Image (cartoon, rainbow, N blue to C red; front, side, top):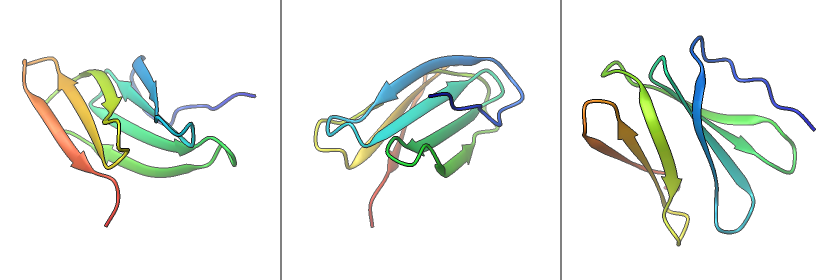
Length: 81
């Protein structure tokens, strides 16, 4: 299988959720994309204007996605309502 990122920059990191259902990608252009691994469809795109996203990871409970930014900050995003 193959997923093509819609980000304009290079993909710098990927993470898979603990339950294996989601994949997140971090891109040089500040984009984070979240995909459903069963359907391979993109379910969320986050555009961060603060610079490249160097790393992404899911918390163990799958409720949050954490992004490590090039400027040294961490951004935390809720995934479920």
